[in-house]
Length: 161
Image 1 (spheres, helix red, strand yellow):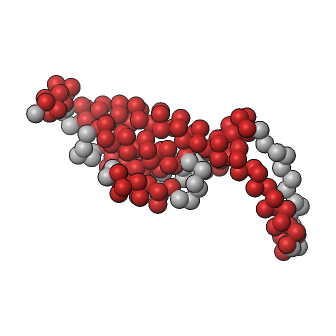
Image 2 (cartoon, one colour):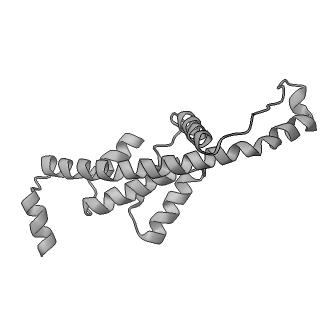
Image 3 (cartoon, one colour):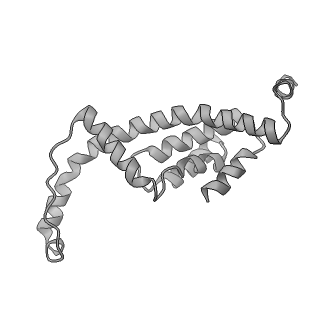
């Protein structure tokens, strides 16, 4: 799915700067702490700011079931380095334990772990978007020069008219 979206993204009929911006914003959304809402958020942003939906959603798909665990772990680790983290006290888990209210109360008490995750996610979001924009812009321009015959002179002439 990602490969097909990327192929579509490379062949969009819009300026590479605009496509790269949409992809970078999608990447920012994909790394944000709003787990599970990335696709909805990307679609909403694309409508509100009139950016390309394919580029935004493709960027947000960088966080997917295969990459989610490492992204969450990295977010939490980065956030823990910056804001510290309280000790984690997870309750003993077993079939009989998870059926008790005490188990869920102890688990809910770990909400303090969200702050390091949120801080780390925002930092990763900013870094990923800052890297994604120039990388996608370079890729789009290179692809178009190679496969669509655009030369830098053609692009300059298109912008001048």
